[in-house]
Image (cartoon, rainbow, N blue to C red; front, side):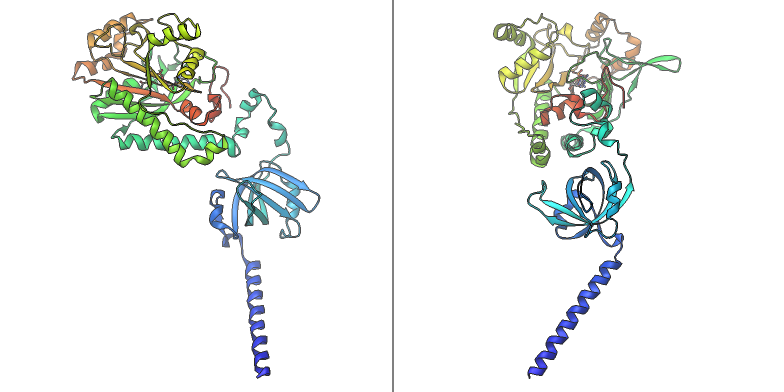
Amino acid sequence: MVYDERREIILLICIQIYLIYHMMCRYRNMTANDYDDIKLNQVDEFKDKIIKLYTWVLNIRKQGKNLAFLSLYDGTAEIQAIAKRNELEDNFDLIEEIYRGASLEIIGKINEDIRAPNGYELKIITLKIIHPSAETYDSEVNHESSVDVKLSKRHIVLRGPKSSSVLRLASHVLKYLRDFFYERGLEEVFPPLITEAQAEGGSEVFELKYFDNTAYLTQSSQLYLEAAIYSLRDVFCILPSYRAEKSRTKRHLTEYRHVEAEFSFANFEYLKDFIEDMIIYIADKVNENDKDILRLWNRELKVPNKPFKRISYSAAIDLLKSEFNIEVPFGEDISDAPERQLVEYFDEPIILEHFPTFMKPFYHKINDENDKITNSADFIFPICGELVGSGERETDLNSMMERMKKMDPPLNYDDYYWYMDLRKYGSVPHSGFGLGLERLIQWLLGLDNVRDVTLFPRTVNRLSP
Ligand code: 4AD
């Protein structure tokens, strides 16, 4: 009996030894291809597992000859990693050749670690340098670098979770915008960016040589959207617009992404209501889906209530005078600082509406009750200032031609023959808006400068990288 039990125990031990030996052999013979190839935003699913990772080195701290701490970022998320000589399969010496910015292939185990920022640490088992990085990386740019150096080295500044979170949010917001437009029955169109005539008039336009003629980079796709409604009823586009403005403010770019829409059979009230719904939809989506990004920027995003506060242009300049002793001559634009005063005064976004007729381009509809004002509205927000420019469009051909003549310089009818045809052949009441995507992201994240929202900003002084 006793003899039999012993025999059984010995047999069990032998089986276990065989299994362990078999597992070790398998593990040794495993190649990089045998592990799940993951992205760092998937670590939750791979807790306690050995994985393969393609990544860049954000930071590396070498401690003596046998230990190194790495911070890795693969374009989706960041993780802290540890490499120990005695645990790394015979290639620990490669650590000496690794500098910030290097790209690596790593096999490692994901361990839970409550001290780590994302709750995990990667224990490196093997590593391969895909492409080394020069030792000079550190001296290229750092926290103390001037704004100008940071902008010149933007291709390097962009690497890492914080800068990339802004670009990621812009990518998400574009999707939310498109989802919202499709839900509301709009179709996307693609107007040309090289134009024969200026959309907004004025001098703020980039000219270019177009074979033997002069052409312009578009300031707005609005006029083409007005033509597209006859084909698709309600339309939108998300394309660059160009402004040759010499403004050196924290919210002006010379090239920006312009989100524009145009609606048929739609009056001024419909327009403002649509824009309010759109902004609330986007802010709700960001609060719901992009909490991590908001947290990274310490941003508590307050969703505005509908209807937004409305104030006419003339009431706004009166209020600036009475409350802040700021004099804005009637007919002049309300500039940055007073605009900010207005938003602070109401402590919420405002709709500044009914600008005087002579202030606005020829296409703005003149108000039915007061021909001195137009059905135009700018949406002014905290942080980014004017976020949306919008209005009902003029449909009366004669009135429009009168105003084209009065513009400075006067507009040439021949350049706008097709736009005038839209009034000649079955025009309808219609309205539309333009929103600066960079300013929207600036407001959503509470960022001080629109440049920080842009992949490679173009401003008066900056054309590179
Ligand atoms: O108010 P704007 O000039 O309106 C138009 O261009 C209309 N034609 C649009 C339309 O109705 N389809 O510009 C619209 C928005 C502004 O509210 C602002 O958000 C953004 O475009 N914007 C700029 N963003 C960054 N840099 C600049 N220089 C900008 N100029 C305008």
